[in-house]
Image (tube, rainbow, N blue to C red; front, side, top):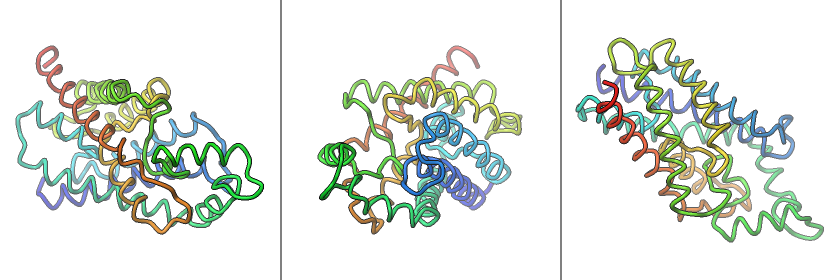
Amino acid sequence: MSSSDIFIGETIGTAILILLGGGVCAAVTLKASKARNAGWLAIAFGWGFAVMTAVYIAGPLSGAHLNPAVTVALAVKDGEWSNVPTYFAGELLGAMIGATLVWIAYYGQFQAHLTDREIVGGPGAQDTAAKSVEAQEKGAGPVLGVFSTGPEIRHTVQNLATEIIGTFVLLLAILTQGLNDAGNGLGVLGGLITALVVVSIGLSLGGPTGYAINPARDLGPRIVHALLPLPNKGGSDWSYAWIPVAGPLVGGALAAGFYNLAIA
């Protein structure tokens, strides 16, 4: 694979991943969305299908890492780091593009949600507004969850451990059964397996932090949230932002090290 193939494949694939994954979060969260309040099952399966779709699109070009934690794990496993910066660049750019497309697709819903008194406060606001104000005081605006993850209980060690554990499971599954014969990305069956693993992680381990398990998935959209002209959007919660970046990178590296020691 050439550097241009890697960059283009990762940009397109990660953009699709975030468009569909962030899209299901928007669908469940925003007022005037037909899927509002569809719940955690919809989010978990939506993200799983997003992974599957993105893998099949990007696989022929770049091997479909779509996740810096995957890139780091494969580099640790094989000892080959030369293409890591290219993968990282494509993944981050793709995540930002995908998040921007979610905003475009749900533009009217964002406007309605963020100008609703029950959401952002004002005369006649209800309990929802109080919760929103409390969240914003902690640094997270009322629609940040459409873009990035955040903990239900803020406990640095637990939050970091949750992201490490979830990513460890993801990468162990990819390394043991999701690689193609060339060993450089997800094969046809691996895309489906990985999608189901992501659903499982979301259902079983997603509750505490929202399961970023992907630094680009969290950081890219968080940057977009900070830049977009959304009314009453609140903060981007930068004090938490390092956890969904560091946790998955550590989890991916640990999974690769474990694989090399115990399985390979």
